[in-house]
Amino acid sequence: MNTLPPEPEPVSTAPPSAFQRVISAYERLAETDRAGDWETLRSEEDVLVEAKAIDERVRAGEDLPLAGQLLATGAGTAIAGLPDGPGLAEVSAVAVQRLTQAGAVVLGRAGKASVPAVVGAKAADLGLDTETPGWHTTFALRATSGLIPDTPVVHARELTLARRALAAATEADAWPRTYRLGAGDHPRVAVPNSAALARLPIGVRRSFDAVVAAFSASGMRIQPLGGPFDVLLAPSALDLAEPGSPSVSVPLGEVGGEPFSITLSTAAFEEQLAFDLAALLTAAPAGEPYPATSVEFVVFGEQVRGRPLSAWLAELGARYAGDVLTASHYRMVLLAGPEAGVVPGAQALSGERWAISPDGFERLRAGLVAPLRVTTVRLENGVSLPAVTCDPMAESTELTSYRDWRAYLRFLSTAGSKSAA
Image (cartoon, rainbow, N blue to C red; front, side, top):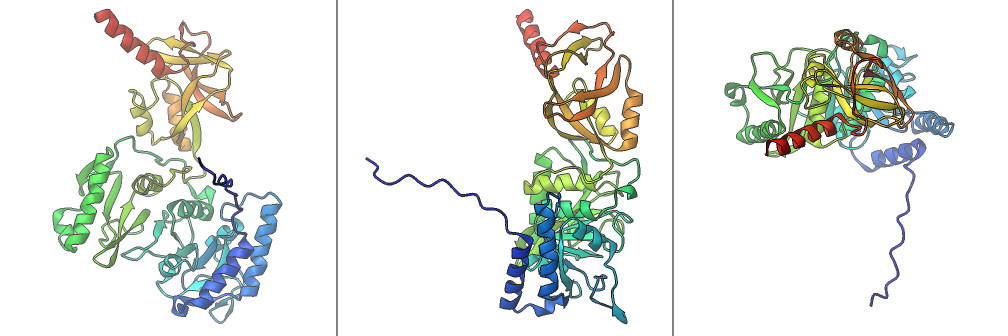
């Protein structure tokens, strides 16, 4: 008989406030001998004042995606109140302003080429810099030229945090109307040839081969560098991408006592393709698309993944963003094709949510064949999104009892098998 008292229920604790995080950071700085990592540290009193203001904004209900995250910048980055040329900087660099508006707290400027060092040593949560080194102990995200003025590289120990910071530092109006958020279920991944890899230590080559094998097993189409590709995958020690290309560098531990990392590079404004592969490699949450200008929409029929028209969505650069369930306001009908049509009714239907560029969405709308069209549907959570539906007056057959296009297709397959028997 068990006479021990029951285990107490776990007590949830609130995350540390920005004020507490700053105090802890300066205590760690006092305990460690890493003064050489910094060019200029701000006074603890000044940083605590800003941290307290962040906490007050959070208590007031403001949504701050970087609340309390401690930020280090590269040497030469303007920070208000710190030496800048002959005097003190009056305003911070644009990227610094954007991150602090999102809740980050600036500790100071790291020494030359040591932003990854202070982030990797946990002296700061985030770093801003102008370049990425040829090796990485942190996630290093480089934005397309022009999206983030002056300091286009974000460093962080976690991919999810780095993505949030990159999004916060990017001006939404800087995005063009057309870009790709996805490359389908089997993107083309280019890799260096054996001659390029031969310059690297054998341990690095073996580790890189393991990464390539993992991507291949996940359905990526691995191909030698030289032809068209969606993402370029290379060891970070090899600088093979076009100058200024957007990229995501992923730290993967050590090989032979040295940091080992890989870098995923893409064409301009296609960072999301690299983000998704990095998330796959590290099992990090996929997160929301990087561009703030993307359009979300819902599909129900032959555009869902695995069906013929999903390839069309891939050509348009759309990205799958999850399954959804509508409010109980619709019904599903069978159109010629065969294709699913969605019209007003009294049932909930299953569908998929996708994201796409503004121009891609207009191409989608223009490419639909009647009676399909784009209208607005309400989801079970109350959110309304544009969706591929159909003209209620179209000639059709009732399918509402299935509530899901794939369920109807499975029924057809089963019925066909029974008939053949």
